[in-house]
Length: 260
Image (tube, rainbow, N blue to C red):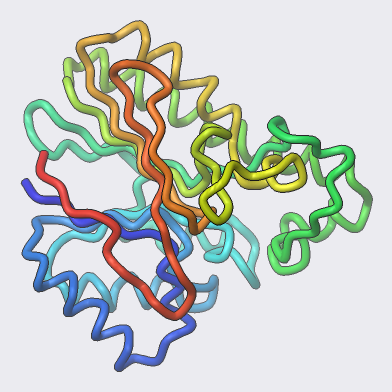
């Protein structure tokens, strides 16, 4: 089975003609399924664009949502709008007798880097309604909300991975928008600094899954993420490979094709 992976395609920035060019590149890659690791569009049109992509490429499009996908609407409403599509947090997706696909969105959880002294202000705090209210209340309230979102996704991912190991899958593909490890969170090819790491990595995701991977050395883990727009590859243990996709606004592209 050949999988096509892309991330942070931000297709809402493109008109229909340019979106169709991207879909045509996917068709030419001749894969069996597409994986998108978040930041697909905006809240008002993400469901439409995923449907448009699925119809155009003619193969399943599996995805998680990124922070930009929530701009303009409550998180719950956006999740509901894509619930009838191949949204990975809904359920695990067996790809073969030995390989399974699992995903959650993931959120920067403020646990890496130096959140308390960070001067970074993310557009998320303004445009994501669930984050705007705590942001207006102050830094501590924002941290509490971000960690609540991140921990909820980490808990779901942990449950899925434990179940996949129990069922005997020997290859587990994990998809999250936010990288789980600070070593894979790069900016312009270098590790993100203490200002950015609180928002560009999700420590709770890595802390939830890495012990499970180490306890199942015969299971091969491939972890795909986006968010930082800078390509990275990292091996936190012998049986896990973490990859982060490179991306540019207005230039959606396939990051990688691979067989499972």
